[in-house]
Structures are given as structure tokens and as C-alpha cells.
Length: 67
Image (cartoon, rainbow, N blue to C red; front, top):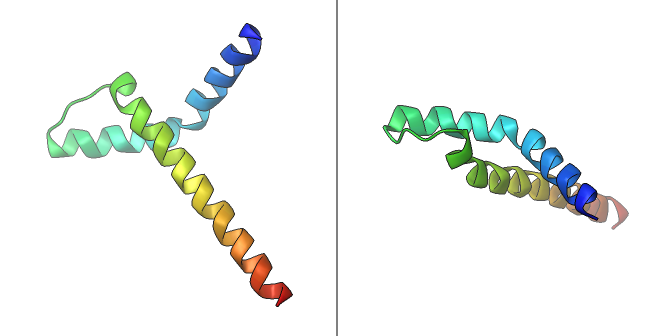
């Protein structure tokens, strides 16, 4: 169980790296200098929001094609 949680944490951190990196660049240009660990929670949320939106659009297009 603990091994699964460690692997899950690593997958989430690696999977959200692009969103976190872009967020760090944006916040650095605005003047809020945060590091990777400071921007990581928002990067994870952005990753899940974008993934959820993409899944929802695929669902809606499938429903429309059946009608």
C-alpha cells in the first residue's frame, strides 16, 4: 500500500511537471518568485482541470454523434 502511494505521488509530480513549469515562468514574470514546490499544488490542479475538460469534450462529441 505504501509503495503504491509513493508510485502514485511520483506519477502525479512527473505528470504535472509541464503545467508547474509554465506556472513558475508566469509567476516569475509577474514578480511572484516561487520555486517548484511552491507552484506544484497549482500545477497539479491545472493538470487535472485540463485533463477533465478534455475528457468532457470527448464525451460530449460522442453523445452528439450518437444522436
